[in-house]
Length: 294
Image (cartoon, rainbow, N blue to C red; front, side, top):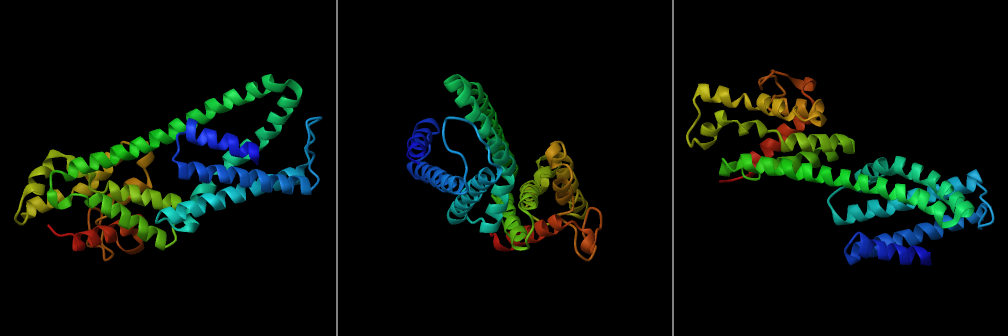
C-alpha cells in the first residue's frame, strides 16, 4: 500500500497532471485495492514471494474480483456525486467499458511476475514498455473521441448562429433527451445514441436552402413549410456520412418529427412504428420550444 501511495501520487500529479483532489482520490483507490486484494489473496492461501511463480486460481480470481468491484464502486460513486448521471448508469457504463481491460490486465500481472522473477529489470522492461505504448494509444483514442464531440458541438453552434431563437437549442434538446432516456431505463449506450441524435437533429439546416426560412420573421408560406419539412431527411443524410451514426442515430434524426397519430413527416409513421429515440427527441424538442423565449 505504501508503494501504491508513492507511485500513484507521483504518476497522478507529475505524469498525468491531475488536480490534487483527483490525484488524491485515485491514489487512495490504488492503496485500497492493493490492501484489500492482498488480504483476500493471502487469506485464501495464495503464494506470496519472489522465489517462484505459483498461480492458485481461486485466490487469484478472488483478488481480481475485489479489484474490479472496489474500483467500479469507487469510480461510479465519484461520478454519481459529481455529475447528474444516476448511479446505476454510471456503474453500467464504467463496468462495461473496463471489464475486458481488467480481465486482460489481470492475466498480464502473472506474466509480469514471471518475467521479473526470471529476468529481473530486463523482464519488466520487455513487458512494461509495450504496455505504456498500448496505454498511450488508448489515451489518444479517448482524446480523438472528445475532440470529435467538441467538433460536433461547434458545428451545431455555427448552424444555430443563423437564427438567434435557436441559439443553444440543440444542446438543450440533447440534454433533455438524455434525461428522458435515462428515466425510462434505456441502456447507457442507447442513451448516448439518442443524445447524439438529439444534438444533430437539426444539422441539415446548415444547407443554404434553409437560410432564408430561418431568418424570416413572419409565417412561412405552404411552399416554404414543405421545404422546411425536408430538414429531418437532410439532417439524417448528413449525419450518415459518419459511419458511426448510421443506423439508430440516423433513423432517430430522420423521424424526430413523426407524430404518434401518423400525421407527422417525412414518412408518416405512427405509434410504436416510430423509433423510441425519435419519440424522445420529439418530446425534448417540443419541451424546449415551449420553455424558450426570444
